[in-house]
Amino acid sequence: MQPRNGISWGTIAVAVSGWLVSVFLGLLELPTKINSFISDVPKAKESVADWLLLDQKYTGMWTSSTEGWVDATDQELNSSKASGGPVSLRMRVYNGRVEGEIESAGLSEIYVYSAILLEGEKRDTGIDLLAYDYVGGKKTNLALMRLTLNDEDERLPLRLETIKQGGPLFPEKARLYRTTTDVSEAIKGTLNMNLMRQVIEQGQTAEGPEKGD
Image (cartoon, rainbow, N blue to C red; front, side):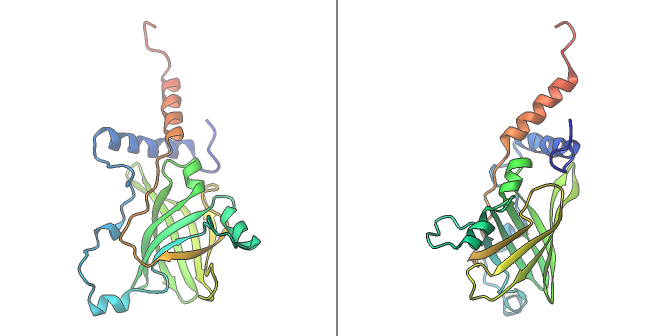
C-alpha cells in the first residue's frame, strides 16, 4: 500500500499495533492515551522559585478554533479553517523548556490518534517546537514548528508556523488564542477507528486465506 500523505504505511501500522496491544491488555484507559508530565504535576502550591521560572505568557491552553464567534473576521475564520486545522495545544514553559500536547483535525484524519506530544525550547524570538509520538517503542518526530507571540491585545496573539511535517497533520500557518492558563487537564484526544480498521483489514489481506479454506 502507498504511504498516506507522507507518513509511511509501515509507521502507521506499527503505531496502530501498539494501540491495539494496549487496548486488549487493558493497559490503556481511553480516551486519555496522551499523558504528558503535566498530568503528574502535584497539586501543591508552587514555590516562589517555580513561579518565577514558569513563563506566564506562553503557558496555557491555546486554540485556533473560532467556533461560536459571531463577530469573527475573515482572517480569523480562514486561520481556523486552514488545512489540518483547527489546532489546539497545551504547553507548560518552564525555565525555557516546553512540554505538552497538540491536537489537530489533520491528526484525527490521517493518524491513529488526534493528539500527540510536544517538546521545545523558548528562544529570544519565540518557541521552537517538536511534535512527536512513540511508534514501536521509539520516539518518532512528526512535525517541526515555531511559535511567536505578538501584541497581546490581539484576539489571536499566538502565531504557529509549521516548518516541516510528515503530511498534512497541522496547518502551515495558524493564529491561536489562549482559553485558560490552567494546564492541569489533559487534552481529550480520540482514536481514529477507521484507520485502525483499515490496518487490521490490510493485515488480514496480506496473510491470505488459511489453509483448508
